[in-house]
Length: 369
Ligand code: BGC
Picture 1: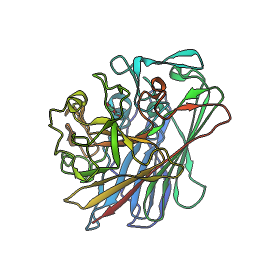
Picture 2: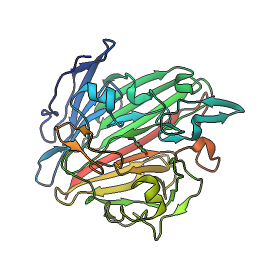
Picture 3: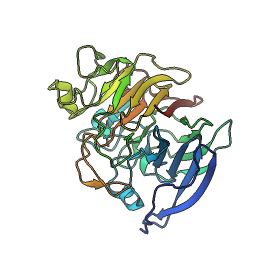
Picture 4: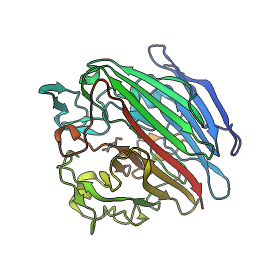
């Protein structure tokens, strides 16, 4: 594999529209070239790889107009291929875990690769985060951006049906980063697409995210067993470390001895958004970083969001700017259906049938105050 060292995106001006521009990022072992696309609008600058649809950089200004890359990642393709904990990637076919790597649909049992203890995580051993995507400039509606397409064949990673997937990364004129997913199938299947950017609003490599304040509009969450599979209960967050209904620092209760904090080695839980599954994106989360003043709001059509506080970052990876990532140096907020939904008929369904179109939209808005 050939690799090329890259600095984060420097082009794009402040506020103007730039790109999309395509450059070579590296080459996979089998000779497949991997591109890096850059696009900017409304003060937000995005760098995206055709491998995994990975958001390799996401630059936004602080309250003084100073830019930082607020997404954890690598500068070498080789690191993404060999050791990435899903940094910046599109996750599919199924975000988060399916218990025992098996599910039954219409009376037939399907077997998935088991890659996380006894369970199948993030689509299996070679999920959408490790696949090549066809990328072209986004050409629909307002905004500038990229359209990524991937066709997952029938039986891919054990999942039934040919799944045709389209993901749009759109930057709106005011710099919102909008992710739109669409998928169709030719056999009944299950789908739960999400995105796995690790954020640090002070800039990747700048330390922990424990001082960021977080608000999640969720009165309930899904407690998990020791392998991080939901028990099926929708537990109330009230009087627990999981109560983010009013903004609080991520670190405030992260060392609480609550059994669920212990189970996740911190936060690694699906929050049941009060707004539920919606036809248009509705506000779900606000995160603010006190020193730089950067604020990120998330609106989504999805009924849940997995809040993962970077618990398994262990100091063994050096990121984009050469700094080592340690526990809680980034956080993920993965808007999605609930983990292991195929085993929980009471959860919103993740079944997709021929003739239907899976649609999901999540919008990240950036400001500084
Ligand atoms: C999961 C974590 C997992 C991480 C992988 C998150 O979506 O909830 O349990 O370790 O992805 O980096």
